[in-house]
Image (cartoon, rainbow, N blue to C red; front, side, top):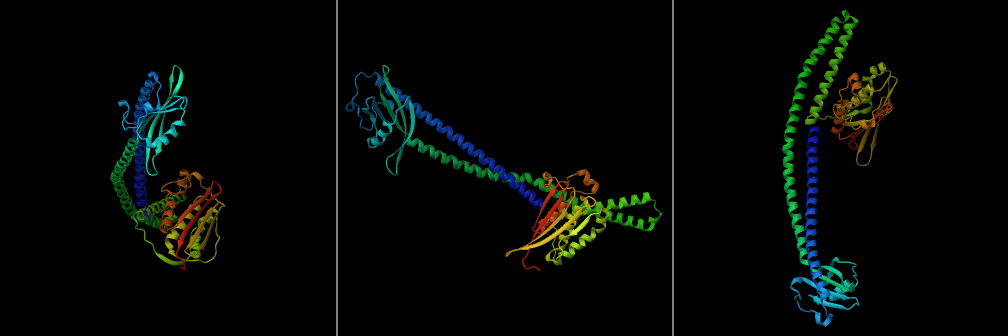
Length: 444
């Protein structure tokens, strides 16, 4: 898996998703604000118009000296009796004795439905109601109806109901919303495309700088390996030919020099490994081998150090297990985990290795567990131990010669084998690393 490709592709994806979410939120808020503004504006405009008409009708009723009769004021035509009430669908007046006067009516066919609405509506003060009236199963009209009690000399004379058909305005408002959503969608697509182009342009210099940095590290590492090898060989020759002539202090200096050369060489090798892993240059060589023999070989390489630190090494699984995978990568991975455990396990401690092969009908999964009873890792830092150059305790890591690249390299190796690695740890109780690597069925 290419680390840089993952980082850059993930960054681009996150930026695109963040910009898309922000754009969607902005467009939704814009549409909501515009829609609410238009709705309130249209509603208030119609409401004010209806209230003015109602006041005018009430004034006429209050100043009319003669009693209105149903026959005298029943209008059945298609024009209003008052030019100022143009567009009004109905004007009903319900007397205090429940006698209904139809002052104006544009659609007598809806009278039954409208009468049910007004007869059950007893306003305390002037009220405005938005009402849907079903003409047929396929058709409906939408009315804005204003209602107010009419008084004469503080005596209730009746209640007036004035309604206006606002179906056209409602439909026009809905059509406007669809147009607004369509325009917003077009702007969203345009902005999304432009955002991706701008994100790519913004990321290109970063990617270019990263590649230049990687090339520099790779070239520098290659250049360093040769002089380091020469220095190490020279120190070995000096120790072999002149070692007996050195004082104890000189021998100590020579030993320190060799250790520093070894640490620097290991750091250069780790950097080269990561650079090659990022660029996809790491090759795999699959071969048959016995995992038990590999485990015993690794433990033998740590035997001298474990005796020096008085640490017990325990291979808990002694069953031969034939595998078909990249032996060298698995060996390097186990060496990293063992080396890490040796560094952070105190004297008289214990390091254990356990492996198991679990299988089902589809595939097989290799489990390898490396555990110790060392200093442990704080819970809040366990997610970061696989980050490059990250060290839990920097002062302690310097003393142990850690560069913060071992576990990141181990994770890179596991991912190249399509596996996963997990850690479970507690302070002063130890750590446990679990490796899970999928294998082909019937590989043995």
